[in-house]
Image (cartoon, rainbow, N blue to C red):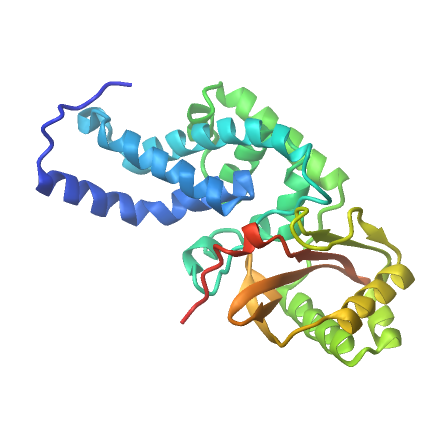
Length: 299
């Protein structure tokens, strides 16, 4: 990579910053989907900005394509090291939630690739497979540009994309309307708030799985909980034991409605569901304070 002179004027730097800011939401969206972490995605985008300032831009025709390549490569490198750290994570690891009420541009692209369940499934892919899948399916990049972004041939990029799609299909990805998802979420919230076990059980599938991410910082189940009866009773047990005065809201998180609990104005829990034709088959509770402290609420 070549570098520009160090005497970039203040006006040039200001113009450069304004141009970068227009592209920043898309770059963040790419990095976040690859990493599942707001903090890591923000670091990647900031690193891309620092490098962009010192890049010889005279020969670059499309800044978006160049910055996408830079962001993708940086995110893949971070994902490789993150995978090792997550092997020692306490309890189930879940992606860090993002508020799509306050960050509407994040959900503007293919929302399915932003869903908590899909992000979790994509953790099974290699970082490079994940990048190819996301650039193609969520951002509709041509394989020629994807190949350049990951420094490979177009034929190999297509092969990586096919492999990723096949892996996700085998893992049971499915599409359910957002209307059905959001309707079931509200029914779920009502059943838990009223302590109606039978109503709650009727919403859950036989193979329901609950994941609770406390990160070792707060009390949470260290293993996923499976089965309609066990999950139903566990959830009502949480409600019965809850202490404190919580504000309960339904907000757009990762592109779909989610339950957000706040205590004294601070986020305490974000609860999301996965839905199939048979009902709610996945429940994700993020309680790790480190993952909640960056949530930005819409005014």
